[in-house]
Image 1 (cartoon, one colour):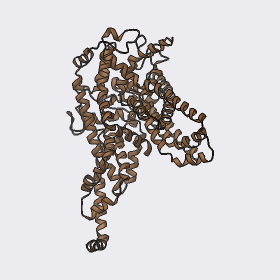
Image 2: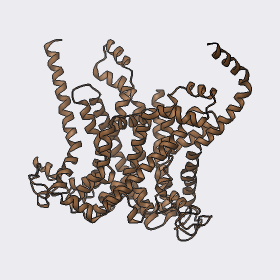
Image 3: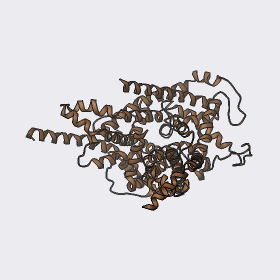
Image 4: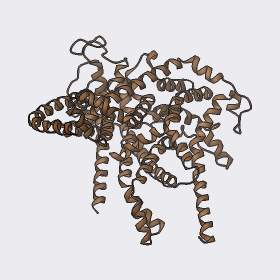
Length: 309
Length: 293
């Protein structure tokens, strides 16, 4: 007892001089600790972002040195039918995938938020598709969507429907990719929604019930507003991800039939790494970046104005 | 409770299962379908109507998958890459996350915000320049000090390990966890004269085991399932990953569904095994990342 008192006292006396030294030492250690992450970030993210912008104004093709061509790449993009088609394709995909993803994972999470027998088993089962790689999922779904022998069309034939040649048809190829990616993505977002639901304080429901609110009122006035940050997060993340669709379009349809599933990332990959037109591919990447940024910004604005209102 | 409300409740519960069971079937049926296909004889694969429960099975498709392509090798390559990703991200993520949460130094918040803002940059923007950074890496792969002349780090595993070794996500994830731990632990040890690294390594890091487990699983899954980047930077078939191998296999033999399903299942199995043993960490990691942003 006496000893602790004495050391504490001694500490106090030396603190003024010591804390300066300690603070200095701590700061150096702090910089050392973050150094690996920061250095790798500068080399592999910071410099590349700046360089990507520069490259998009050049005709760099790996084999010869880059020449400045001004806005030529961007002008060429405006008249590039394939690129415009790929933008149309990806907007179609995002417009289908993101709302469906949010609705499905929300409805499932609401259902599984109740404590009934089997709830945990259902949660596990719904999550499992999220473990598969996009390539394995694509391979399995290519077989499911086989027009003659595939699972989907055989099941449809039980109820007398003749299913289309899903992947060979320009009007259904992108819808097929929506199906695969939904199947893979719902489980993860369901878990995020379940966590969001757990974060809504129970007391809100209790007091609203005392005031005589019915189930729908509870949902629209407590659950939905309470989930707004979660929905915002899922929306932004799935939007950024889905604008960059590549794996499934590459593995299942090779961008076809025709150009029906050619996405911007597919074109950037092809232009940059097969044709080696890296300058032109960088311009494509930047246009896609600006589109994603614009959508994200719009969403941020909508989200904050809703919160004010 | 009145009789009417009891039966209404039962009806509600019944509807609940009427909704959940079909969805569960949709989720699980692709697995069952690929599993039975992978064990069926070719005649049975293309039988109409579907043979739901095969009465004879064969291992031929698995033998095909392993003998026509070096699947074992791809498997080992992917396992190595994913494991390296886990080790480096856990270590550097912890170091960085701890410093951002617990140490005091100038510019901390600014640097952290810059790191965080990279979440908003789509990977596609940095893909080409990152490739060029690796190609022009000084003194590697036949390059001179200015990064000219050779292939740099391309076609080596460093091209995959290095850019992802200390992901901003790992730093962010660990920082959020360290913020929940009390600061007094460090102050007490500092008074006793312990160095900062020792405080981090032997006092704080052991307390973050649940977060480390979640981050490990997250990182492993990302590494195991990664496709586009390895395809860009690796061109030696001996170094190919399992996803690259599976894609090439299903592209070249797109009518051999038995072997394709066998290959897909082999590529999925490590994640399924991991999930069985560490289910709660999967869920924790995802839920955590969703809430705290």
